[in-house]
Image 1 (cartoon, one colour):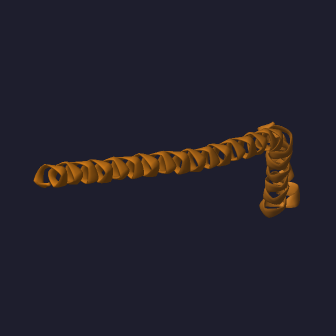
Image 2: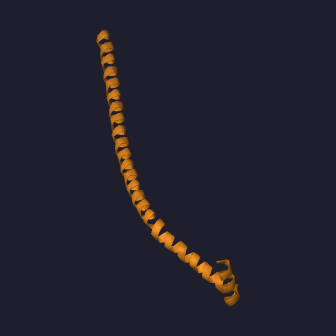
Length: 100
């Protein structure tokens, strides 16, 4: 093979043979990318889209749960304040009844 390569270089010149070699290399890489890499990238992008959708759903669920939790906490605070006011009123009534 090296004798054939040396004869081709002597007949056509190094730049022509190098251009053919680089052209073949580009063709080989292009075929490899389109047959091996492109299908895998397609599958990976599909998986990525599914994961993004799931993350969005989880984010929406977290927002809903946070709103529910805040509502429950607000209701508990309101109930505690109501009990404190009732206790304060009842203790004030008890003191007023004792003075009469």
